[in-house]
Structures are given as structure tokens and as C-alpha cells.
Image (cartoon, rainbow over all chains, first blue to last red; front, side, top):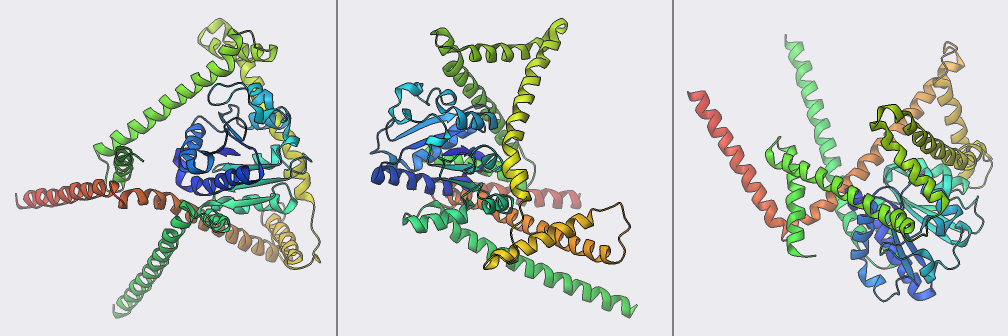
Length: 229
Length: 226
């Protein structure tokens, strides 16, 4: 799971990311799925990962760090780091957040390239283009799926990639988080925020109607005033 | 979460949002703290990464030739402070730009160029065929709108008008989804301000704003009477 986020985008990115993370940890408990966490966008992504790990503590607590899951924090280099991860995982993820070398982590034993990874969860609030550019299931046959977690505004942006299979699916913003939580049966931030969002939209619609009524009224008054003159 | 963290969070949010009322020292304070913290943290992370990934491996003899080369290129950036050898810094910039562009272009060819040139059938089952047809019409008409070589008359005029309508619909969708996305930010923050202990800070902020409004009115009224 790669997080191109920082604390400035926490309330938009964290609900879907936490839902995805909970799912990953549940799969780790039930089916032995291994979870690798990192970010490549900037120093802020390390704090972001720490923050979502605090919120999902009860899901990763019983798992063994280094065997079931690992956190590499910030891998500097942005897209170059992503390309490096695809071709040489141990060479890119040299040390984890605790300073442990990749060779000492049992989870990383058989992971050499992206072909050894089953799926990627890529979370971004900026540019989703980098996911199909560097981590495409079309390019890496071992990679079964890629999920892009992004802003609602970026959905039209990534749809052509989804159509062509360069991205397998997407989870968009708080609405995507709410839907994911419903499917997972573990309600969290996404479901809570969606209630508030629905009310916010009703308020927006009310403002649009009020502003239009005021505009029409003012225009009518202006017209009748000019006729009287 | 510890109560004092929630209070600090609420205070910082209200400092930032106080700009909506008017420019004030609380906002300035919050702004400076935010920028200072971010820069401080970025510096800390940079040093941490350099220590773990560069200095410790080099000091313990675990460094590779590529790592040594990267360190040399990194150090060359600082030659710009010494005028006679400042040109050496361009090598680092060149390598950085070259690698960045190469990595991006190499990955872009298949999904972004070749993949997008493939046109799906108009007769595909379900809505897919209809979507493919819409995509073809949208592409052709939008290109027609930006065709400045010929004067848009006759069928080209109608096609470019359709292209303009499609562009407007597209911008509308982008704006609408962008607004929808942005509503999410304050909603998440608002949760912290309406539940204790953040709500106590919100009440205090409302009292301060109320006092400022009243004192402002009083002083303007005194000014008018004088």
C-alpha cells in the first residue's frame, strides 16, 4: 500500500485508506496476506501513515511486525522510487521506519520485483497518472490488481485507465470509503462523514435555490422599475 | 486521543479559519507555526533518511558504488555557492531531470499513449457500445472546436458547437466533483470542533468574535457621533 498523502489531505484520504488498511489487516489475520506500507511523495506521508496506523491499531496489534506487515515510511524519489520499487524492491526499500535492514525482515524474503506482489493500493490526492505509468497489471503479469484511492474530482481522470485495464479499480474519497466500509461491515470515518456530506449537499441545493429566487426577484423589480420610468 | 491534543487541534483549526472573519494576529500565528512545523519536520525527515540510507551504510562499509555516485552527485549541488566550479552543479540537475523524464516517458507509452489510442467497438454489448460511440463523437467534435486552420462554416461549425457543449459539460463535471471533494475537508475537521473538548474552544472563539463585532460597532458609532 503506497500513500501519496500528507496531513493536509487527511480527512479526504484517511477514511478510504483506513477502510483499505483494515481490510488488508483482516486478510492478513484470516488468509495470511502480507502487507507492505510506504509512501513516496514527501516527508509528510510518513506522518500520514503513522496517523492511520494509530486509528487502525486494533486491526494490526495481534499481527507480527516484520512477518505479517512492514512499514517502510517515506521512500524518497517520488516516481523514480516507484519505478525502483517495481524493478528492485530490496534495493528501493533498504530500511524500514525502525532502521531495520530489508534483509532482516522475513516478510521481504521472496519479494524481489513487482511480479512478486499480488496487488497494489495506491492512494493519491495529486496525480494518479503515476500508478498506471509505473505499476500496471498489463506490464507486470504477477501483479493481479491495482486500486487507486483518489479524490472524487480525479475519477474522470482515471476512468480511461480503468477502461483499458491499466488500473483495476478505484475508491473515491469519503463516498468510496463509506461504500467500502459498508461492504466490509466495519463502519468508520467514511460512513460518518457521508451523513454530514449529504446534509452539506442539501444546504448547497437550498443556497442555489435561494440565490436564484433572489436573482429572479431582483431582475423582475429592476424591469418593472425601468417600465415605470 | 489525549485531551490536550484535541484542544491544540481545535485551536489551530480555528486560527486558520479565523481568516474567514478577517485578517488577525491569531491567523498569522497559526500560519507561521504551520509553515515552521512543516519545514522543521521535512528537514528532520531528510536528515533521518540520509542517516539511515546513506551515512550509516557508507560508514559501516555496506555502501554500493551507485550509492557513492549518488552522494557525489548530491554534493555537486552545493558547488553553486563557489563561483569557479558552479557549473558542476548542472550535472546533478541534468541527471535528476534526465532520470525523472526517462522514467516517466518509459512508463507512459503503453497506458497513456498506445492504450488510449485503441478504440472500443460501437456495437459492444450493454452500455459499453454507447459509451464508445459517445467517446468517438466527443473526441472528434472537441478536436473540431480547436481547429483554427479553417473558418468554421457549414458542418464544421455545427461540429465545433457540439465540441464546445461537450467541453462545457466536462468542465461542469470537473467543477462539481472538485467541490464535492473539497466539502470533505471541512466536514472532517468540523467533527473535532463540535465534540468536546474541541467544542469548548469553538464556544470561546465565538465569544471572542462576538466581542470583536460588538466593540467594532461601538467604536464606529462613537466615531460617527464625534
